[in-house]
Image 1 (tube, rainbow, N blue to C red):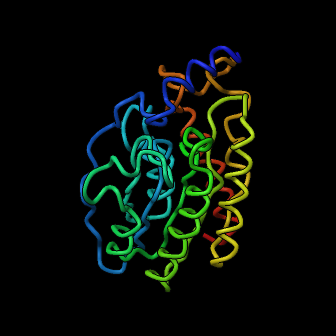
Image 2 (cartoon, rainbow, N blue to C red):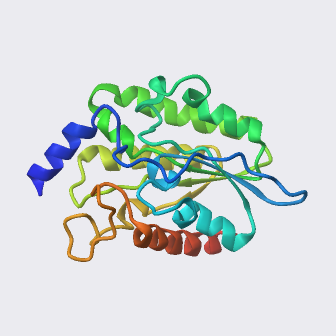
Length: 227
């Protein structure tokens, strides 16, 4: 397993988890008057990479169950720092897009891919976590912000995983956001090398079953928050 992880880390170090193409291009949502709009700032695990279609990803499942209008701004390989500078105009500053969207609720599900930049950019990652969450709070003073512990994709966990988790948790508390802990363990026992795998063929992202299980866990957490 350690040899497999080493190969994966070498392959994804620069780009993060980007092996599968996204289910489809993201259309601009149509917002009904009075509807609750929900924006998602995340990576491939929130974009739904590995799912058979976008309606199988966890974000779309929880929005459909609640009658929310989904604005999914998530991008493959994206971290608070990882791949950000290479995303191109507009996509290099998704928090600004979300502020313009003016949603009622914002989910932040970032941090997984920053593990692949951690050795050379730890200080920048920590600073950008703080600045991104500060900007979202200041730009959307009336929105409910929900910060989710960064997801993870193997049983092997480099030390950086828990460091980044701590930085995200602390920043969420500082801006008064809701925080959902434990998400980095939601696929435990069901990774690519496990007998009961919930991972897609690339071994990096959940399949439809995996996203359904993430949606179930997220649903329980949201109910506990009164949503």
